[in-house]
View (cartoon, helix red, strand yellow):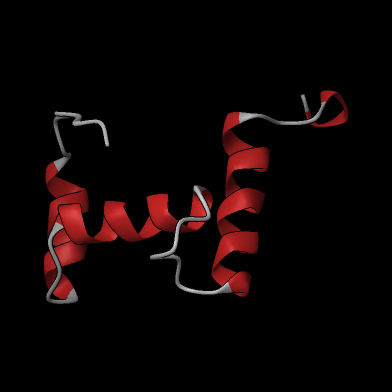
Length: 64
């Protein structure tokens, strides 16, 4: 496993805290879904994580 240190926007932290979560918990859950690890939250969540990645980070040529 790799370790990453990042700055977290105050707005993101506030959003997480509003649900009783930490940014670390939310990011770990998303990474588990996108990475399809054993900690994944299910097939629908994996599909949505991949959809987000494909749309935002790696859009198809037609989407650019």
